[in-house]
Image (cartoon, rainbow, N blue to C red; front, side):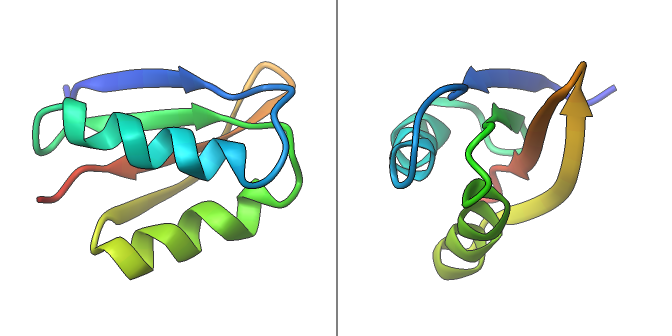
Length: 76
């Protein structure tokens, strides 16, 4: 089972979820999935775009309860 860490960005608006992701991801080991909880609709576009620009793996969208979430695997 892969390691999953959670970053709670609920209630934060663009660009804060991506900024927090960018700051947190280097702190987790390579291969770890960081699950970003983000209820800002812009996060659905911003997080995958950030992953493409930074060479990180966007695993995909999911939900935790009623909250949208986005899984990102640290690759480097």
